[in-house]
Length: 403
Length: 138
Image (cartoon, rainbow over all chains, first blue to last red; front, side):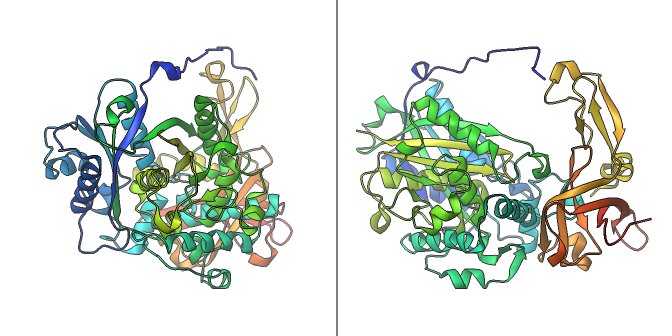
């Protein structure tokens, strides 16, 4: 039934906003970093970003920190001022942003809005997660808490099982195979092998991935991203001020956010992430481009099936073609579209609330042509895609080489 | 899960009570106060409706790394079921071999024990599913 109230919500025109540049990037090693605290990780990433930007630190007017669950993982809430304080910036307003696995991406969106709106000139956006201060089982239970606690997990669903049910649905509906899922892991490990910050910088094989113990059928251990510690940060400012700091700034050309039902069972097509579609459609429209204009993308591959759904829902491939395209090598480095050149969450690692910023760091490296052995050739546009929970929130940023 | 948090939704969980929008007739489970389709027309216009308890499997998985409260049942089969009323539920399917589970399989829901806090603590109940062909719960 048509809604009676047909309200046209005016979205801000691109012309009303200032262009925003990423002038500095920094990230820590990702892995099981038992000797480093969340505080140390956050500061290390932040200082690297400031150094990269050629900033002193006193320019910073605001900070946003993406973090999913410090309260549960290290029993420390209120981490934004904590990190600001130990970065020597205790007077700087700092706020933690939480949206499950999309926390980092959503923090970047807040930073972008803050600069684009004219409210602030210099903003640092970080993402940090310390997951290994609890046991692996506990960390996985905390990830499960992004699903509907009262109508999914109480009945025995785990985070893995909800994605497994998406995978099964995708296989039944679109003919996706376990081989195709495995190829996602193989490709992302191949890319991670060229990334010194990756948790698993080594290659693997399809047979090895497929022979791993089952976690939740049809997903095995190597279909799942790991539990990780890590942090990343970017420094933002208006494009017109960027060049005095960074010779190779990268522009945040567009942004789009999407939402969907919290519980997987509420969605009509369990093999599609509508939030991703909604986010990317908005982002493409704002920049007046389409998926064909994107040269590379960092997509949220917390499971192999998630990458297949993402490359379909972002419009790179038709629905149902994500698996076959992966199998044919169309998403490998410097093929049709390079997907997860960093190694992705799967092999670079998954410090949950930092992943969105890790993606921004990778995209910036690519657009500056500083990605070394995993460099995408002649890239103009890179897209980054971060999702929360089982896909109830999604955020897409499109980054452009500044020329 | 904390006792009051579970207790608040006992009626819905035990009896399968959802809500139907009187403006468009669509049913929701768990019950919603607002119909996402009709929004304002549905304010104070949602009516309680009980599920009949029959439906078919939309998707499923065998869970080898269990939810900690369901460790004893591992590996167990989770499923999303579309009920005859059109709503979908997430729950266990029991008394069936995983190899026999498939999309479209007809199932029936029944109230069963989900878990307990301790031997003397609260027992959690909720719905689970059975294949209609092989076993009809009492």
